[in-house]
Length: 110
Length: 115
Image (cartoon, rainbow over all chains, first blue to last red; front, top):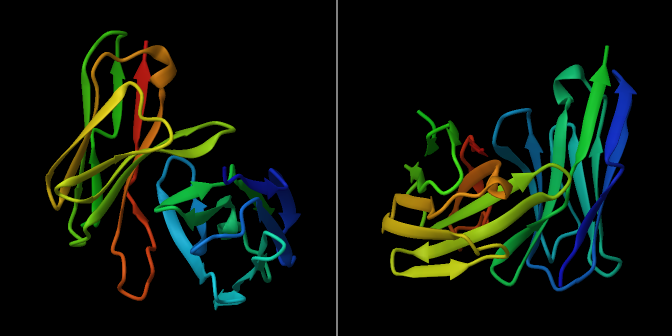
């Protein structure tokens, strides 16, 4: 059974720092891996999707990497801003469904 | 207008009541999903549908049923609500095989409280 773990569960950093969020999964037979952002009381917004054949994807200040063989992905956020404060979820797609981690709650303070 | 809408946004009900949560999408996607989110447990899949004639159970389908009335509509029912079904419920859609490879688009959620 696929299990997805995210570390740390919570993170608080000052504005301007570069930071890394981690995601690990137990079954490497994935189709893709997705990173989402969730604001309090809101739905999820897709940030990046990495196909199983890809190593990384970039969007603005965000860069996500994927190492299938080790069952790991990282989300790198450059020059963090208070507006980046949210919960970040990773999810892996296999067997026709997404399996989510429990998220990392990020707070960026001025 | 939002691409994926959910009604109601908030609902308080009593144990034993029948509840229906509705989801509509304007993205033209074939695939639709229902998830629930509980603190510390992440999102878990309840049911999913790949087209109007296809319904599949997810990880936690017991106590729930669904209906895919049209490509754009997917409703979730709790036949007899119980307190441990108190959670945040999300509907999502995706369009397989378009190159975006199953990016899922989420509705804003329905907060359900069962007393």
